[in-house]
Length: 112
Length: 113
Image 1 (cartoon, helix red, strand yellow):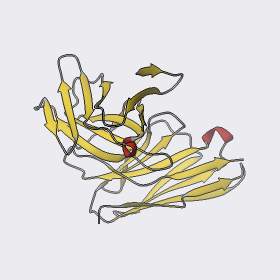
Image 2: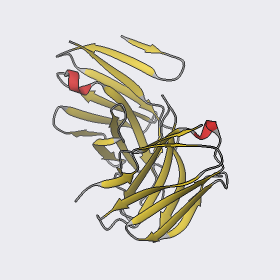
Image 3: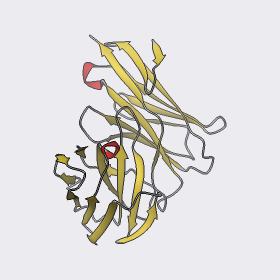
């Protein structure tokens, strides 16, 4: 299930189940969106991206959905594995001339 | 080479010390960034360099002083820090003129005592 702690929402899933991590963004001018995975003690690692002219993009075991109407982004992970346990951040930028702005993050905990 | 390399990985410094964090990339990226990340929080932008010139300073205190000696290197000079400055400092780079992902280093874990 999903719970919201003091600082970081946590999503706990059983190994093999699908995970859905959500993100709301506020800047309607954002043109590019990314999902990053961050493991403890490491820097953010790119997972998948999507541009504003698309509403869905698939990678290996991951899918990103973009709903510009409600400014919502989601990351779906199929057949979640213990190695997927990490904190996931969405990030957005308006263009190549503007920096990335990160969302709050969600901790994914995979139960073996 | 798609790596951003940061040194040192860990740093403990006193409030009167002067130290520097270093970042290096050889991807030809002309935008480089410093982010600060506290525990359980997202990275927060500090500085942006574009073509070796400082383009964004997010109201960062002057005890943090960035420097971009050339297109591959980015430094963050630290002086008279406070314990609340303890955090993970992340360097990132990206192509300047295309909206793509930023490549992040592993970060420097800074502890101010």
